[in-house]
Amino acid sequence: MMLSGNAVILLATNNADKVREMSEILSPLGFDIKTPRELGVVLEVEETGESFEDNARLKARAFCEKTGLPALADDSGLCVAALDGAPGVHSARYGGVDSNEMRRSFLLTRMQTQENRAAKFVTCILCALPNGDEIVEFGEEVGEITRAPRGDSGFGYDPVFFYPPLGKTNAEMTPSEKNSVSARGAALRHFAQALGAYYEKW
Figure 1 (tube, helix red, strand yellow):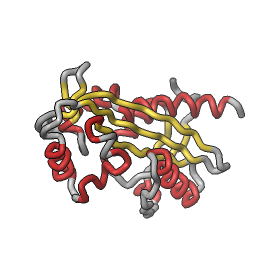
Figure 2 (cartoon, one colour):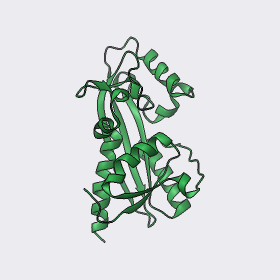
Figure 3 (cartoon, rainbow, N blue to C red):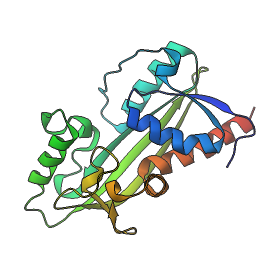
Figure 4 (cartoon, rainbow, N blue to C red):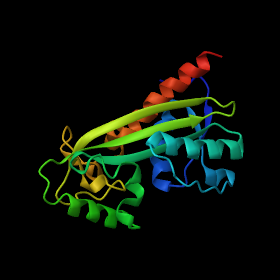
């Protein structure tokens, strides 16, 4: 779906990897993407919510109120069946360590004796609009946890997340492959459709 006119959307994140992925997906759909850096906005939002939606709302609302623009935030996480859904909303802080490599290592150590490797990425996309309305969409990518990291692309848990239909980890995929199957990609495409329907009502 292409929007009839470019809709201005502020990406409510300072994460360069997320900005790149979200821009790659939304720009071809007709969105005029703005980033906090472009607007000179410096804002850190503490993610204290108990769900992906809670955290996405905290970020989107804060950036919307700061700029007066529609602000789009995502909160994503890895949910592992054998770990009762962990790390979940704590994915970015899992194990209390401060690097992606260390978090992946912590996860693989916990999974060392587990035969059930089922896992999924979950993403909540929330757009906070200046009039107080919200658009909320979700996406999932279902796969498995590997025994060791594979691939040099992507970020976060991508090297240890295997997607069976493509026979690759997320870190072995090309950017276009990952965008076509990722939880974030699915949620953003749902959002684009929902926003188009929202504007059609006015």
